[in-house]
Image: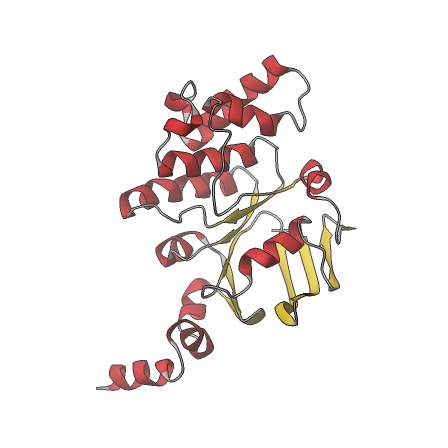
Length: 250
């Protein structure tokens, strides 16, 4: 890993007097697979929106690939190599899987035939080859999650921001998706993922940041972070870390 591909410096945004993101700073190393975790309402998706240009911060800055992109439009960031997925998957239901993926490919490919060929290559990478001719509306939840990943991947990202790509999947589907995400990182795509499925975080992430009430409260290797008292309190409530410690001593 050589240097930070994404650097966020003291990023903040306020909605109606509530600081949804409060002075967050972090650096995502080029070539890494990292995770952003935290309880519901912690500000994780809002932070992704600030990074990718869907929201403009009240203060702070976002630097991608050495360039200040604070508040720059999402389509310009995607063209520059930063793409995000969304927690709620909304494919073009009447179009085929192939056509959905080709929409992302059109960011760099003008011709329809070439974009459709690119869609086939991307589908293979995420395990959707057998579904290419299906209408997107016919996909299962797991299939739609793979399609969301494929649409993002077809933009040829350097940095992929994955917002709960495993949410709604059963344990078997999660175990099938983990190698897909790992394969993207192995191919050279830098990945930062928001995730609640701790099995995936422990299996995939090299480094983890923990957000609670809009602030970073911990960071480190997954094993370190899950033992951190502040993290346990954020997830399980006041006094939880001490209760767990006392239980371990008995």
